[in-house]
Image (cartoon, rainbow, N blue to C red; front, top):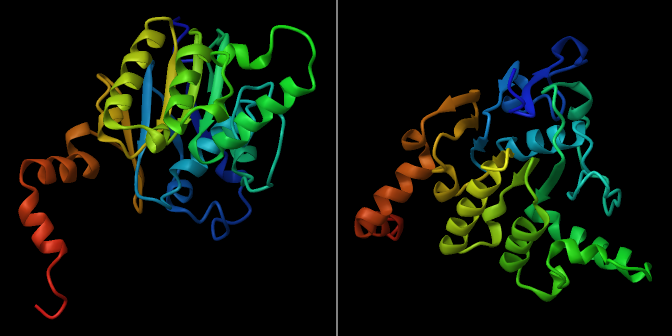
Length: 252
């Protein structure tokens, strides 16, 4: 039996759901969820804003013991009670082997993680400081993109399960390529990634299992069939017709 994937399957305990007409069970991604099988190395969720992919990722992370706003399992801060109760209704099937490292990255609340690291170090007089595991420089003293990369390069150590919610939010295309390179290094060190993203660059990771999250629920899809890939390719190959259509006067 192989150690990977660390997280093998997620099943919705549908018989425990009181009503599928209330949030978050009314979201198509949850309403039609039965089970999701995860890839050995990279599983990616794609879909429009509001499709429920981040809600699902959050529930998986909480179910695994991560802080709802992000961080490792050692983080327990809370700035706002905003997560759903979905994690209570998920059955997580895991490998016989435990991962040694783990992190839940939420682009929208990474600022709070950085603040918590600084606060913890401020109240600690010993050595080493917590920030040393992130490269030694406060994440607030770097750009958003630099702090994301510092996290992946310095804090992620391999043999890990890494859950990333829209990591491309602060990354230029070249930095997204750097993330792909770092992912490869970590996967070579027996790591698993679960990612929600809009980035066709990150979706292109070789062998990634991609799930489309939308009105039809959750369906596995090929990279080239994702809307993100098709729209980006069409625009870059010939932007002028698309721009003309977008800027067409309303009375035409």
